[in-house]
Image (cartoon, rainbow, N blue to C red; front, side, top):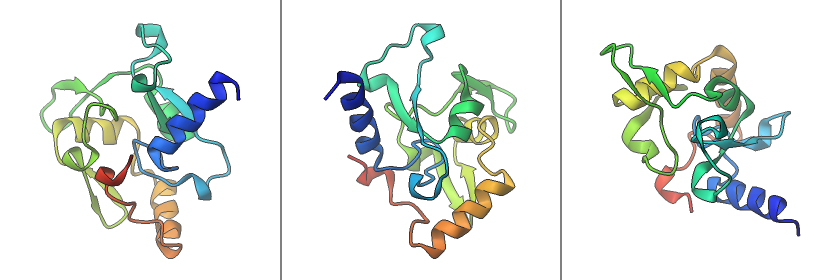
Length: 142
């Protein structure tokens, strides 16, 4: 198996088939999830496993090459959620189908990645009917 394909499988397996930002399950998506560089290549990020996350197209495109965003509550610029360094459950929680930030990192990431777009809320409702929402705790991810 080519090294790139093996790396892709490792990233997807680590994420359990869910976006590591919004926790959406890939099984209901029409598009394939992306390998996302947590630290963008444009800022020196590399293709090592510790810098790669499994991301839905929406999260990947909204994040783009950003590593920081403003927390609307405090007005302070903070780092975005880093799936390899931060614990999802410490920074986010569910309020029905909406993803809420518990911390400045969570709030800034939720806004920057448009986590509560109406389409995402509708997908979470569909996921619930199929037993995929709420997603399992991040502590269960390999």
